Amino acid sequence: MATATLGPTDMLVGNPSILIAEDDLATRALLRATLERGSYLVREFDNGADALDDIEQRPPDLVLLDIGMPGLNGIEVTQRLRSRPATALLPVILVTARGRTEDKVAGLDAGASDFVTKPFEPVELLARVRANLRLSTALNRLEATQDVLVALANAVDAKDPATEHHCDRVAGRALAFARIAGLSGEELEAVGYGAVLHDIGKIGIREEVLLKPGALTDAERTEMQRHPLVGAEILRPLRLGRLIGPIVRAHHERWDGRGYPDGLQGDGIPFGARIVGIVDAHDAMTHDRPYRPGMTEEAALGELLRHRATQFDPWLIDLYVANLERIAIEALHPSDALTRGLLPTHEADA
Image (cartoon, rainbow, N blue to C red):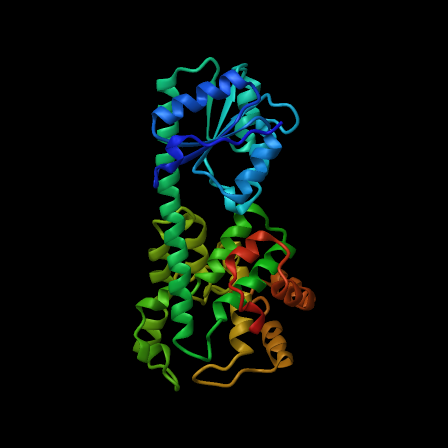
């Protein structure tokens, strides 16, 4: 039978909330008493399935899970939490009476943040809870910063009606294309964020250059070509900066080495940047810009193929062209949580 009870401290606004899933009544009572002495808000369950349902409806700030629960055990609950974007960074402390190395290895592989061994010392438990909450707060701040940067990138995009929603369209197609190209996990996430943020550096470019209807002067072109460098520098402090930064910096590099800002060539260009570069160029060609009208799809396809092995990776261009219809469909109707989490609801307007 599931139990979900609240104590007096649940009325304290602003205190971190902790969910306990532990089938042993005495251990659960001790965990609760210890945490309430630390002024934490506590919810408790005697099984993993009900705990998982409750976490999905109202995620706590931290979870304490018994490894040895019947039904869904702590390791299985941890795996499910890590597979869901909303709880991927939720601190999870596994509680075990065994203390065996294999249990800890399995817990770490599942994504556990920390361990407490029964019988536990209350002082140690509270210290581990505080440490994990501090780390979670720091990560949440970085995630919030990423959200702000995505909003800024869209604000830059929206300055010009001709390019509005460009970043969203590029992100949807780049994610679909990256999956077809074999990327998954962290690399796929990097392509998604890299595509959304590829033009974030245009924040540092003067508006009269960004919106100029005619050809740029040499000085203006030099200024415009700074935007990948500015973007990479903005992203450098982020949690995903080491993965996103190279994509943003290199999305205007060319297969033949005549791109910018670093003149990278061939396989020296990050794979994710090559993907974003193709999708970015295709979207730019097929939409109006201040200095020229958009091309037809047929004309744009001809340009992509004409620049195969000069501007673009030949293998990726062939893969992209062969899967254009599939990429377009998947970009408009994303099936995975990552894509839905990155794209606003207006992506189908493109």
